[in-house]
Image (tube, rainbow, N blue to C red; front, side, top):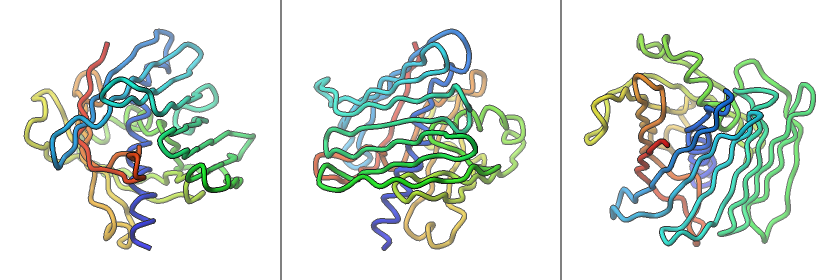
Length: 239
């Protein structure tokens, strides 16, 4: 139970943060960012990410192996909501597929674990405190001033693999060694004591002035060829 729960929540942590590192797509000027994910165990480069904010509140993410071969893509649509966007993602390493589509006051959530499993779809009702995928970045920006005072904020985050929501607490914390001096850091942790037993807190660093994600330290949202989610340290550069 802890293993499946841990994987589901780890997927949540990374999806909510890394899909939205350049949510300047909220505006009219496209921008992009490049991330490099290093193993916390060995220090080796595991994969890279290219984030592109597009016109009409669209956003794309391309994941590639160290040699440049693309293995996963994500498309995000912020046109109906910045905090609860629609999106779809395909990991070609194992065939994992996720799709969340808003329909009126609810969302159709589809999930397939791999090419060897069947896709399942459920309808989830919209909720006041619900955050979906990269909408977390818009949430951080909206409540930036409150977070900077030390206030803890709780959200109900949609977990597509479980087709339900989990509660998380986000608050300011000390930065890890090696974090840029201009950063402010936060921790993200499950509210449930049971989930806390399965997952360590995630630490993220944001630029104080630009409010952009600079660093993520925690479990990756993209599995390796064996289907495992590795602990990573991801650093970002913005174009």
